[in-house]
Structures are given as C-alpha cells and as structure tokens.
Length: 153
Image (cartoon, rainbow, N blue to C red; front, side, top):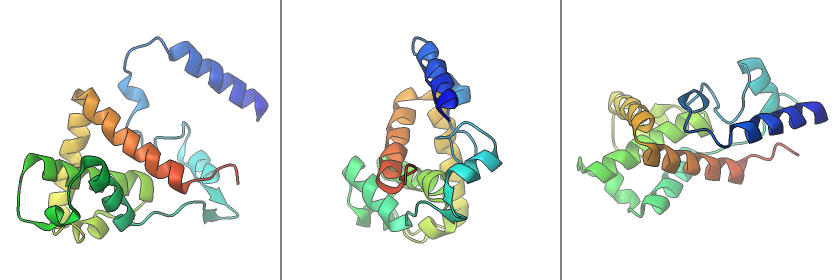
C-alpha cells in the first residue's frame, strides 16, 4: 500500500504545473478514484457494505445552502437560470455521490425524470467548457463526500 501511495503522490506532484486536463474529470461511477469498477467497489465497501450513505434531501439542502436559494424555489414552475442550474447540480450529485436515481431527486424538485436527465446532461456538457462551474460542482461533491465517507475506518 505504501508503494502505491508514493507512486500516486509522485504522479500528482508531477502534474501540478499542468493546465486543466478533462480526462481526469467527470469519470464513471465515482470520479474520486482512479481505477476500474472492481477496484472502485473494493474501495467503497467494507465487509460487502457501502461505507457511505447520502439521501436526496441531504444533497438538496447542501446545494441550496451553497447557492443561497430556498428549497421551495426548486419546486416552483420557474425556469429561472439559477434555479434550473441548482436542480441540475442536485441531479448530477445524486448520481455521482449518492448512487441515487434521478427519480428520487426529481420528485423533490417537482420535475419529471426526463427533464432531470436532460438537465444533468446539459450541466455535464457545460462543466467541460466552463471551468468555474466544474470547480463549483466538484467542490460540492467533495464537501458531501468528506461528510459521508470515512475510507480509513
């Protein structure tokens, strides 16, 4: 394990001076970990159980707090840009952090699953071209993960 950590640390240090590299963002099931699905499963489980849980409501509360909007605004029929972005971020985080379905968050924000899916796809596309957005969304992801995951346990 020590050798792997040392090699990874060297890899990270060597890349510190590089510009944004899209291949290191937005990965598959869990972009926090470099490795295949089998490795990912081993990292995020303990005795066959997931080591973290997050609810759709916890994601909604965190995102609304960061964006400084009222949760009730998410359920309104408004298509205001900021509120639409918040809904999409909630959907993206539900998939990335919580392993939740879009259906579970769609009902919380009074949208159908098709609308949520489209919003998440548009957000993912925008994150590739708008670095500030990508940084904001990934910071939310890290904050949720830090509150929920204890891989050292």
